[in-house]
Amino acid sequence: MATKAQIIKSQKKPKFSTRMVRRCFRCGRKRGYMRKFGLCRICFRELVNKGLIPGAKKSSW
Image 1 (cartoon, helix red, strand yellow):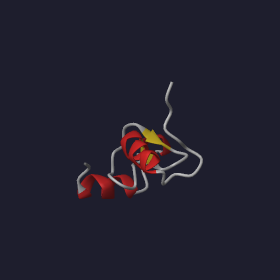
Image 2: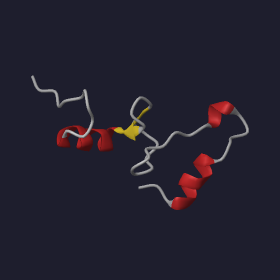
Image 3: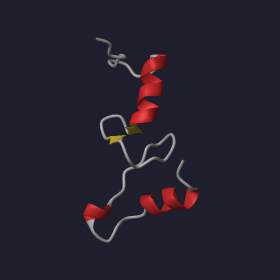
Image 4: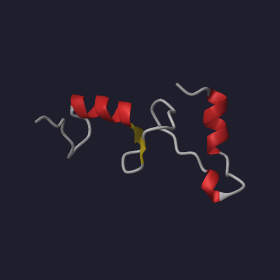
């Protein structure tokens, strides 16, 4: 869980565009982020298992 200071810092415009930090909008995690959904892998998996993300389903093989 990211602190409020880290979340606020990542929302500021960076000096260089490559320094931009994308964070999950639910928990604030920056690693394992999926741009298409705006979520980290953990939150994405939770929402898919609950059936809240249309077009995605839990894989099994």
